[in-house]
Length: 255
Ligand code: PXP
Image 1 (cartoon, rainbow, N blue to C red):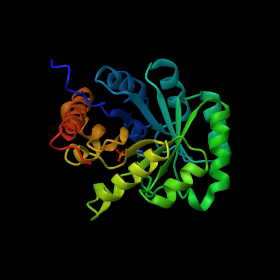
Image 2: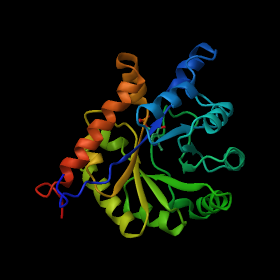
Image 3: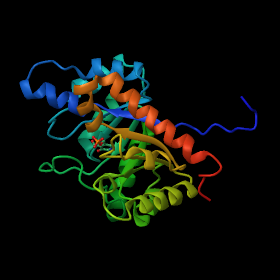
């Protein structure tokens, strides 16, 4: 290989396994087991496991968090609301990272980003509480410069940009994500992204140089029904890596 060719940093893939638990809970038994899925995801090239412990425990339960934390060697990223209850559970289970998300009981999934700008005091307290126990906090925000600046103000070292509107085909979203990512990176934040990503739409997000991690769940678990979980993850990885390589070739690099 020529010494002059710079290999781009691959984007990390966090695999969200909430919907393995959704399927299990539909019958109330123990299968399919989220821990088994986490171990398979690790073998297939996932860089981390993401689990969302919702207030209503509709999919992941406390025991799932604990078992994955104890028995899967990958870093565990816990998604959670910024409540006292969740911060206490995180402090007990000690995931590697926590991503603070907004949560409404009636929503089907996380519908919008966290309003950090409108709740700076409470979010700053949650960020500090997590840092104090050695957990890396992140905030899940819309690609909005106000929210990026608020993330900096509350001391969050990481943001995750909500890609739901982009995945839904909203005009101008890719540019908003690019700009928010650049703004955050200029302020020294680590930039992640996720929500609604699939084989068809992940490439444009993986190509953004500031984004270092994607968290993807629903599509991967659905695709696993047809091709198996390892293959679903491997294909996603391959698409992400190819998009990154393509974007970083000199002819395609954005200035
Ligand atoms: N990131 C965050 C913060 C989320 O809340 C979710 C959904 O739980 C995801 C990523 C993954 O989204 P999806 O399941 O649509 O891939």
